[in-house]
Image (cartoon, rainbow, N blue to C red):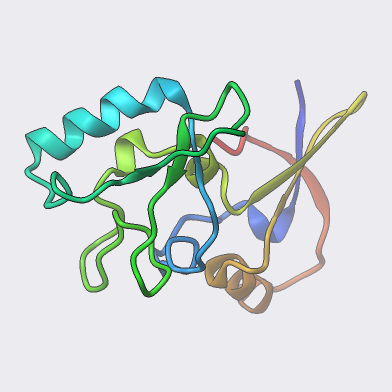
Length: 141
């Protein structure tokens, strides 16, 4: 399968601005991730044992165990300002891993773009020099 990118997006690497963790979005958690997240909380003594981190409701799709809980300030419970990244980074939900990638699949392949809601992807617009072109590149994740 071929992956097509704008050349200015190829150098994307998360700079941990935290905007995706602090925007108040409901982040779905796959049932297969719940155990791994629970293990991480227990192993790393993340101070969430007394706090519900998974919000459930009766009308969730079968492939969603719940959503990540948010603090009063709308930040994800696993985000701590001033700390590098997410407390569950290597077991985070797929939605977190996929942001800011936006992919369109068609018969030619996968067309990868980046959401410019992300400050890092927006900065690439201003850091790029030369023509903007569609190029073949690697899978996004």
